Length: 253
Length: 129
Image (cartoon, rainbow over all chains, first blue to last red; front, side, top):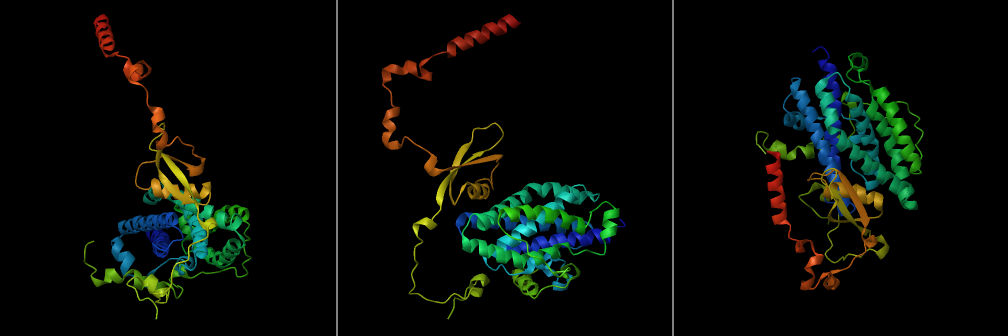
């Protein structure tokens, strides 16, 4: 297939985003604010790990290594995730706001891909729809809860997290060199189209939550991740994440 | 001196080693109330009680119920109800459900229809031949 390089680039972005946010969110396991939320958030992290596995498996079909090798043996510069997912978990306010802005984009991206001409990806998109719908339901309920139905402190913390996370979230939509090719082939309508849908979807929920979207002065915030330029947080996380795998890469689990 | 754990997340948190400190319980208003969770395994089924959970309000109770009670089993729908909205006749009054043996005509098992049904089916099968 002539679009292989373009499809691979798209799949790597999505798979790496899912793998890294899965690992970050799983860092809350056992430390969540209440038991019920600990279970829910951990389970969402597991779903994301599952989505990354499915995407790495599609990449394997296009000639890449098997998923464990792809996930655990590349170094920082080979990752295509955005900066948003790399940041440490911070406080629960930060993690929830990141979860909300990321998952809304994730849901809308997969929705667009349900009609992709790259059939394996269209099938996967239909399969993960229900899980991601819950992720967004979980995130939006929390954001509204702490933004509009909590107290002064919870509102202030959510607003300050939004100020910090919003410019990072715009980095999700860093355009690739393959935008025109993907759109022309009917594979993916593009990052700009996705960003437009995303902005229209998050705005009413943030408004309901009494939260104001910060004005972002820099028009190209948090870009670089899609080209392998990452924050200082990614490599230490990768080192920790792959620590056990590297003891014996040939072990079967 | 901070806790040095096998779990890097704990080590990173730099928690001081202090065997003397004790936990301060949360004030009462910080405890969430409980919700009872009912799920439906398939369309048309009666909702079945599956357990309870803590939540600050019904919206959050639904968010939690999905992962607590519908994660590992088949489920198409969930109900949550505040525990204090459920009114009960408790087991301490279970004697109100007892009836005297002489009144079995008031119970379903008081009617013996098995023989009549068998006879009806036999006659119907005969007339269909």
